Length: 435
Figure 1 (spheres, rainbow, N blue to C red):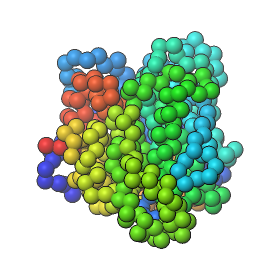
Figure 2 (figure 1 turned 90 degrees about the horizontal axis):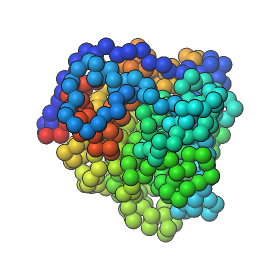
Figure 3 (figure 1 turned 60 degrees about the vertical axis):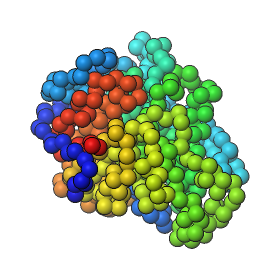
């Protein structure tokens, strides 16, 4: 479906170099699919998370537009020159409507000291899922070349910050610090333990989690990576429920009156939550954060819940990424209305005609087929089958678009515009620009 006031760029073939994706062992026993999946929240369409692989290898200095050539495009997909470190830390904060402080674990990928002798990192979730990597190193000292521009990732419902690892490894290799918090109460392990928070609590706390993370980074924290992130240059991206989170933090507010009136549809616990005065005050005060410079929502959820005119009011550059075959969050309900509402001259829509909801993350290749179908039986029908774009191709291209968009609109490296606004990087993608 094409819209009227837009310009569509046709796809062109491109030889893409092989990419390294790290596949979990086939004896993984559970939360990994839950880690990626869109969990039914007794709520509107909510989804999952995101993943991607690699990006530009250019130290793109400001100057003339880059030539639109296979060599330049290939440059976008290669791993960068920086060694990559990986570590975890946690922070806590007082959240509206919650008596106890929220304790939020965070995964971090960052440029590492080139002289490090650290061992390879290993990704694990709850002692159940283990994903090896030959890119990231375990807790090496950070590079002294910082501070580095900042990326924050918001996972989807029933997801996990670790899902950002393909994005995180690639971006860190190009000199970005990537933070991926776990939205406690809406993670994979919460799903396994049947301990999801009320839907409306998660809708608010996802936003306050990111704000509190920015506060923590700004104030400093107990970690070797404290002080290496540059909050003057921040891009936020997220998948599904995380896509909603990016739009909200980008400045689009929900229709609070409608949430109050319809809260019973999300469960009695959601009504109890939103009927607290401090919660309504938090919603009505606005959800945006001025420290964010650009946003990249992937298959965003909850589009119908934004107040009229709010998406159009977003003043930041927005790269919307979606899959036309998404069954969890159909384009007709979410991506298309979001694009129609967006009103910025720098906004861009990256579509995958054969993309499903699971095309944005790596579960199709990280999980064995039997484990995937056991925990996410809808995955083959929503991204993880031969009917859809190859997920490795999808993730690598989505990462390249994210990185180039951030270089253009966060770092103000104007030469990336000619690539982003030109032909699609690869077959399987369509690019639409605002007139």
